[in-house]
Amino acid sequence: MLGKEDWMYIKAQLESGVYKKDVAEALGVHPRTITRALRRGGPPSGKRPLARKSKLDPFKPIVDELLKAGVWNGVVIFRKIQEKGYTGGMTILKDYIHPKRPLRLSRATVRFETPPGKQLQSDWGELFTEVGGKRTKVHFIVNTLGYSRRFHFWAAGSQDAEHTYEGIIRAFEYFGGVTREVLVDNQKSAVISHRIGDRVEFNERFLDLAGHYGFAPRACQPGRARTKGKDERMVGYIKGNFFQCYGSFDSFEHLNQLAERWLCEEADRRVHGTVKEVVAERFLKEVPYLSALPAQRYDTSYLDRRVVSWDGYVDVCGNRYSVPDRLCGSVVMIRVGLDGVLSIYEGEIKVAEHRLRSVREGWVRVPSHHERLWREALHVEHRDLSVYEEVSEWNF
Image (cartoon, rainbow, N blue to C red; front, top):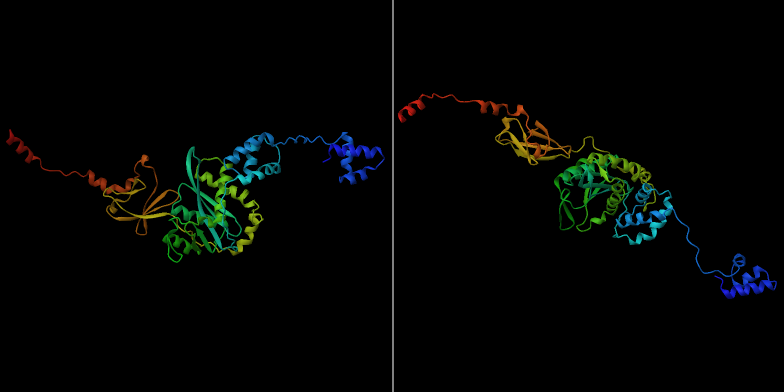
């Protein structure tokens, strides 16, 4: 920058007939710098010009609040401020957020690159949100393909074994094929224990699921759940994007319908930061390496045995459901589907079916189940009452 002494030198040289380019060369500046100094009538004042106003300026406090709340997804923030009246572009927003990213709390994640079709990483996430007008804890299972990074997620009210298996199956159906192995965390629905020598004892039913679909089960080392880095990242992505875009849901069914649409319209179309490809396009390279789905879907229903009580009912989930009275005292098999339908079997034969109800709604009974019991209850034995008359007369 030119100083006062430089300005005095410029004036003296020009007044003596020296060319501007020669003055500039002597000062080591561009000739245009000399021209601007002459136009100003002096050296630069040292004050920076006022920064131009940005369309983002009125919305920066909103952006800062979202960042403070842990929302770092640019698309979500962009939509939020658009709702507030922002008419600017995404680039300005990204330029504002980028210098702040070092402030974001994070932990290093180990990612292992896998060949196409080899691995599906499975894990659960959870958060509270509004479902059916009530604040509800939502569990969602995320299944991510190791090669293409395409993922599927499904939400439920529980993360038990039946919902874990259902989530994996739905992911295979969404992808249209099966990977050679599935990497899971150490939840009891999949892993019983880790033994000496890296041997893993898997849940028997999870092994049954693996055999049905033809994949090899794999488990993370204890305390090393984040070796499922790709899937861990997607759990955070869903929380920071999908659940920020949709703040409430009419039901779990409504939530999962929106999830399917969001997966197709946004998640599949994103450019992945690591592989630098559109996820849906990279997935096309992985499709030929996926195994075909089995002809018959695996039954994820809850299975157990019950003893039928003397009055012809079985106890399930805190309520009572009728069965044919001829089975009183017998052991029956119950099957509870994720759709809330209870089926009761005598051997291989279904003898009753009910829809699960809360205890407040009362016991569930089919009248025809207890016809014999009612007949016996209504049967009254008639006795000769003369003996009672004799006793009565003797007392008098």
